Length: 415
Image (cartoon, rainbow, N blue to C red; front, top):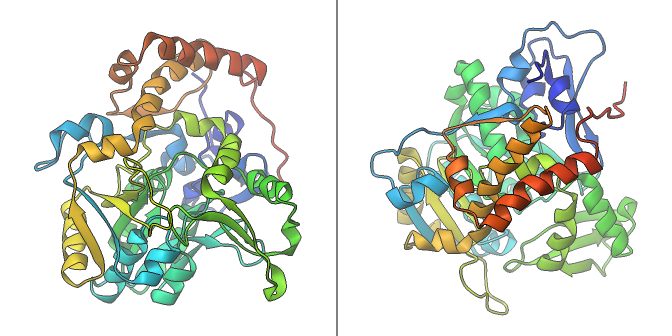
């Protein structure tokens, strides 16, 4: 196994998830993020200034994630192996019709964050939103009211690094909700271990279900496929305005005639640009969050149907917030049978099973691999049909050889 001395090795061997935790955590401020359009957001070391302290590696979820090792009291036992701690499975939507309409699937994360701001004692929510200069890119920010939450609502299928903005959390006047993908929550968790004083500023964690993050090039190429010049785009929305909505690019200058594409068609294009590291991630439902939300794909959608979400309550803190949001009319939620989660996200368990075979093959080639403490990857690999077991190994081997993953990548960083 190769030994890394700083975050550069993580990038070179394609283990970086682009969360940005290292950029925040470096005590000397020697790491900056760069958007490599075909790769994602990647840390870059300022030449010759690394002190070798190892803090960047300590907070890096790309090197590994520790899962809660045992079932929490009161959790749903049948879900733990595949989905982590789940206290309740609910389905519903934001009562505010605009939040529901603008959200990707029911506006529930936005509505829960809004309740936290207005009734739950939170000073704001730290999450990502569109870059005002290049709206197909993302930047971290803090929302402190409904309008700001609404402005940043909706899925963003492009590289995002909310952990790079943890300085915003640090300087906030009170505790914030942190909203992110599974890898972002893992980065946050590791950063709080390294900087425990920051934990007081995290009032709540809200996670999204995630199938991987396409590169910036994915959106640029999709816009070009739609015959849209990225330089003339004022707004890019990946979903929402109905469920699941559509990919939509609006021209600058208030012009009409926005280009649109159905969500399913847009995602089938964008997903091909996900980096291989996403295929090694065992957490697709934000197991480290207090509350996580995703689409209830277990049933057919009706034409013109308004958005709805599945809500997984994972901690007592999350349960208290959900209970308060329901009682005060911010959200409409109903209990669901735990099987609904399994039916909604059928591909997740198969993907997790394949990860063990992929990691085994990488190790056989002498490649560094992430460590996953507490995830029963081998047991889930054993449950795969034999064809998929073989594919997880041979397919990975072919990819390693064809794409030369046995060599470190040398990315062209600026400065």
